Length: 241
Figure 1 (cartoon, rainbow, N blue to C red):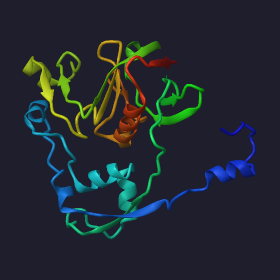
Figure 2: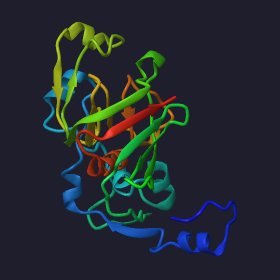
Figure 3: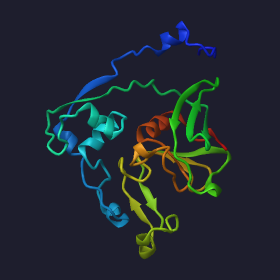
Figure 4: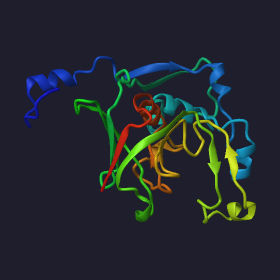
């Protein structure tokens, strides 16, 4: 709500003061280990798994703290991640997020590789790094709308979408991949009114903005879940060059 001045004035400094410590402590629980399981390397194996949960405790802790696994390692230099047991205390980031508020519009910048949501008064609600389609012809520039919204979605593996996959060519059929943070679309799916296009999470949040997709817009899982809570079916989405 501040006017743009180009100066680091007192009003700006006041808004930048942290309301909580930047780091906190987290205790590993026995239940955490119930959410860890190996991820099959093949599409067929993934389709037969009960869920695509976290593959390691480090991955689980990093995702909960909305952080890169390397940062979690640096914050806990004495921890042997292969020997962690319930009751272990860890130092992790303490992200403070505003309560979700209904958005009026989403805008995606292909050149900037970011996604922004605004309220009805044009105020910025969130600004997230975003991975975009690898092939320029599959980047849908223009105005779209939200068609579907799903939490913890499954994923349909279609060999036609992955012509580079030797396994897909051999299978010659679609597979249903179960939900979970390591699902190809992560923990949230926001489908757009162009077949096959959507905004979604990813099993590798540390790569968002650094790698490219098959055409959809990928966010870190925690950003995709936050966005899912503020968008609505029929909401406009602008894809900008």
